[in-house]
Image (cartoon, rainbow, N blue to C red):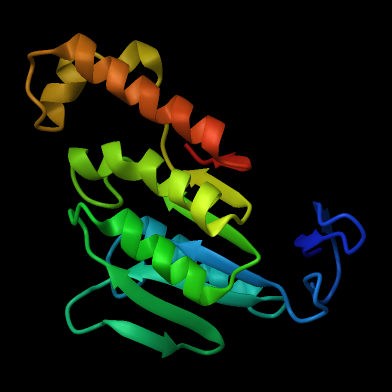
Length: 196
């Protein structure tokens, strides 16, 4: 059985159905924009996104807004999956580059993959809610976020921060910032999927 996200023609709301194809309110094939790392990037989320895109391409138009890797830049069509490589890890402007790419894709729905280090280091994680703000209020499309890891509050301690090279000082501030980021994601996303 295949699960398809569709928009109801009458009221513009989104629902899930099963079937062969999904169309948008204009009658054309729905466009889904996946924001993620993508092969040749070597990470589990890149592979997950590739497999998800391969499954979805039979039912909807799929755009991957991916990171630049080596000589892989620009737009390519990889077996019916449009890959637009427009952002780099640790680039503080990555939210703007991604939002512009989403506008160009003319997506009906945006699906963002997230992990604390997916877009780079700690500063990139702090900027993630800004990306969601841009997608929600500038791009103005429904946003689904898949969280590939969630740290329980009880683990937000000095040893965790030391383990990831964030030092042992200011634990309260770091804990508060992570809680703020996670709560912001919950408030700004139209739907959440949690993998842990």
